Length: 196
Ligand SMILES: [Zn+2]
Figure 1 (tube, rainbow, N blue to C red):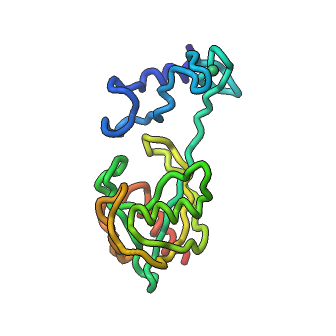
Figure 2: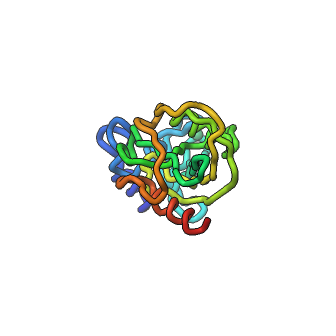
């Protein structure tokens, strides 16, 4: 067995995959724990494929490529433009911290639609997407590393209420953000302020 496979095996958690409610203190994607082919059910083995060790099916040859996910986050500003919408995270990672409303993109969903949906689900607000702000790499989400597309958004309706992955929601002056902010979102907001 090659080195890459050993790392995957060593990281395997006794309780199963690195998924809530077992906590997210170890860096494993659930499908990194896969032992069997999702297509035919045969066992996977480590193989050299395109320059690194990857799980490959012993039956049909399917190769499990581990790619980052795609996610979208909204930097939602109030009408005056001085306050930013943050949610307090109900789940790990960064459980209890504040963050921009965000979430994974569905396979059949454009990223602009993903950010509108996530903001609606977590904060109750309907938003218009104004423009693309940034694309950031979030490598410390134990569920799956992701490229996160950040959109500048403005509210156009709805009623503020926390739901889904958010336990609280609130508007914060961009110069008086709460202490505890996850995902490097403080730096992202600071960069936005500098560049606007
Ligand atoms: Zn297979």
